[in-house]
Length: 326
Image (cartoon, rainbow, N blue to C red; front, side, top):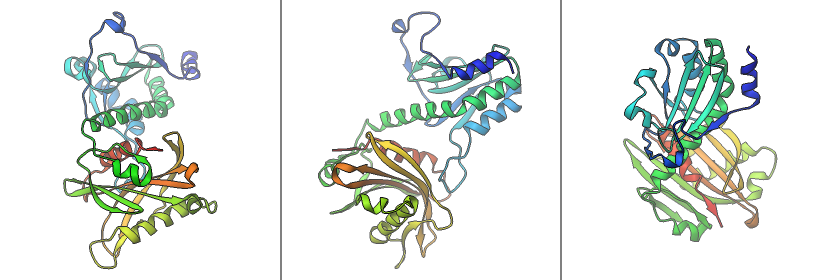
């Protein structure tokens, strides 16, 4: 492997935000476009059909954790370099592969539109290109997800629902689209709902004592018990004696993260309805509020049989990540 390629990854990523033809401050950029979680790949057809394309698909179209069906992290749209002109250049997220140049990877921001994140991957041969894709994929995926999350939140902010009831009951500020309605309001529990094609998207808000989640080292087990108790008490199924629980066949994914600068447990998995044939994905954030000796729990789940749910869960993520606790 060439020395230049080794140096590339010791320096991580080089970020370039300037146009080669002039000062960015003098440029007028159009608004970027594109579907949420879609990446345009500018790569020659021959490279796309070979090992380089395979490496791109393996990384950027990898399966999303916690969904009942296999769905890719990003939808990929390949175009040959000669067609990357005009309106196509306005796409918000793109990767351009250049064979024949010195091995490298760089990030360009707002080159043709705003906001826009572009990645240039170069190498003198296919082996270098494949290595560059595999080595840099995790950082690039995180960068694209951040870009898409900001764009989703920007779109939602155009028409927000009223969260005064959440402020009053839980001390929680949450930015959610106005299409969500309050479905259930109880002293210690709130349920918001959005109707979608052949299904629903749901948001649950409640709180539990810190000791309920941290009573022992089995955090994931305690979160499952917490979810199931909420399901039994508040989420009835379509027939008598049915209620929502965490799917028993598969253990959920558990991560540690932050919301509003506070520690949070992020749990992703599949819910099902006990004694009924209903299921779907959920994402649960338990946000630690030490000042009030509690976890504020904000959960989203989706019911939409036989349809993709990646973008629904992504929207629920975008909502939950706006949470602020006073």
